[in-house]
Amino acid sequence: MIILRGKDLKIAYEDKTIINKLDIDINKGEVYTIVGPNGCGKSTLLKGISRCKKLVNGHVYLDSKDINKCNSKEISKSIAILPQMRNVPGDIKVKTIVGYGRYPHLGLRNKLEEEDHKIVRWAMEKTGVLDFQDREIGTLSGGEGQRVFIAMALAQKTEILILDEPTTFLDISHQLEVLELVKDLNEELGITIVMVLHDLNLAARYSSRIIVMKQGEVIVEGKPEEVFQESILNSVFGIHAYISHDHIHDCPYFIPIDKKNHTFKHNV
Ligand SMILES: Nc1ncnc2c1ncn2[C@@H]1O[C@H](COP(=O)(O)OP(=O)(O)OP(=O)(O)O)[C@@H](O)[C@H]1O
Ligand SMILES: [Mg+2]
Image 1 (spheres, rainbow, N blue to C red):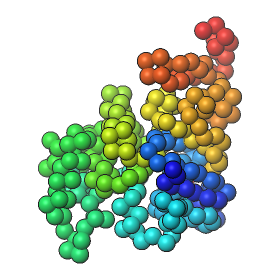
Image 2 (image 1 turned 120 degrees about the vertical axis):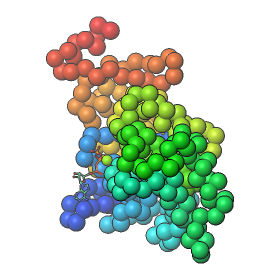
Image 3 (image 1 turned 90 degrees about the horizontal axis):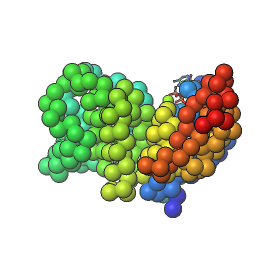
Image 4 (image 1 turned 60 degrees about the horizontal axis):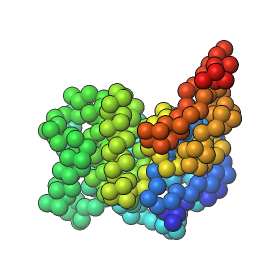
């Protein structure tokens, strides 16, 4: 079942068109990762499908309803987005930031009720930031801060979670921790995930579908094993790659090979 659909999308910054005539379908319950070179329009697409950026053309449908016909509260009860740029003043307390995730759900008093506090606590527990709840965000490490923002998105309690580079700044152990959390959220709570990752091997391991973008276009969309092909990686990223299978996680993996060592792949 398609939960989020973009049709004939055109997105531009003033007169600079980044995305044109793009179609995208997001199936409920899957984990999608968008990959592609820097500047190809991944963040722009995420902003377009979550109505953070106005479309020049086209439509986005959330559960078959045009999101232009939904009010902002309605959208933010369904879609939470962790943007790539996360600028907040450093002196805000962690639990206050996570509490922002509850804003779309607040009633007329615009105040967190007991149930909201419970959800905020649950989100902090789930992301392992409960111990930092009274610290100021500016005093946390990059990885700790990252988890706080994921907690904020989680506290929004949406059926779709959009994460723009959730693993930047993280060491490998914390990258795995965040992606395991994403996997749990998908498997246990059925949350549909759309994220951007730069690490293609982690994308292959943690996604059920991969969307490959280049210069504002979707080049291919499919299961990791369908997308991981030398010719695709070569045309999108300009690299040569040795592609194999990770038997531990049952997914493809690749080793990038620079042009000088191109013959290496024939010897493996
Ligand atoms: N606010 C803006 N005003 C003007 N141009 C912008 C703006 N934001 C992004 N762009 C341009 O739009 C293009 C796509 O940017 P976008 O951030 O979507 O790329 P991306 O694929 O997410 O890249 P990255 O991997 O570096 O995050 C880039 O050329 C960028 O310079
Ligand atoms: Mg980006």
